[in-house]
Length: 364
Ligand SMILES: Cc1ncc(COP(=O)(O)O)c(C=O)c1O
Image (cartoon, rainbow, N blue to C red; front, side, top):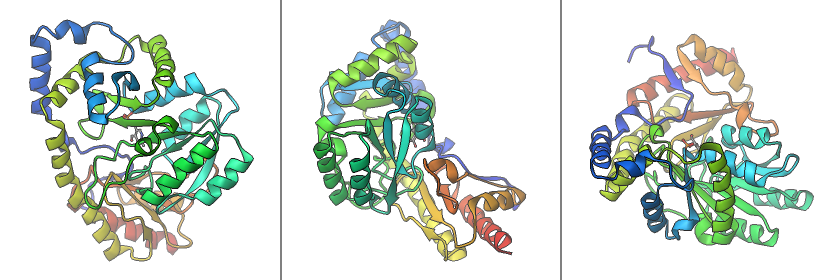
């Protein structure tokens, strides 16, 4: 690994080598050959390709009408905003949270208020204070291996959070694209499992197959999903049935669960490489130590600002993400997200070594 090679610690993309290309090619051929071709090449219901919805419903232990599929999960957030949020209404997110979701809420006129995130999930005392002040339309939470921090919400906090949602008549939008990628430790229940009537749960095949299949899904109350599905219908008639049909065939063949095992085997050593390199090169930065997912994050040492670090990194052939966009109401000046999945262990080691040099450059 040469010092001249550019290292991208910017985007949370899956590794190219994780894509199950040969399996998808076979599934695509089957879908086009079988007499099912018309079904995936024609328009259809906006809620999604019927057999795929049924498969997802069985997997998630809900009824098919409780499943809405779409072209990626992010677009479903946009449809939800159109269906449910009026300009000026308040939306809570964790702080930090996924910047693209924050942008979507804002673009739809929401007043986005941040609930501070701790290592074991949102600060629920702060949430209670905010709930005394505001009546939010929803609270957007990423309980498993959060983007951008890597934090996972504890079981105790999940239970308390749904109690608070019940008490304050609060809708929780649970976004869980990283949940299946747990490399160690024990799975906590989803918020949806704890309080199905209070939660819309979202996930995506972006991190399990590839972003290119553009398959996200939302599960929850059928009437609410029908409203969101109507916005989808008015926008694109039906989602990308061809890619969804290929994904359905792939799931039907039982290929999802072996793929998840392959992903864990590929990504777990990358997380370990990242943690080991941080301990070795930047021991005074405070790192989250996730048990899965795509990200960990650092609070940089006192006096080291992410903006300065990015400039120093650019001089050393390295791209870092801006920490500020993840914080809806400011903060994050020393926050750095490190996505580790799309880099090899050697690139990670070299990247963290360069990062340590950048910290020294900035401190001078
Ligand atoms: C928390 C979270 N939600 C949603 C998405 C977008 O997923 P999709 O590709 O399904 O739109 C991402 C992608 O990085 C994400 O991190």
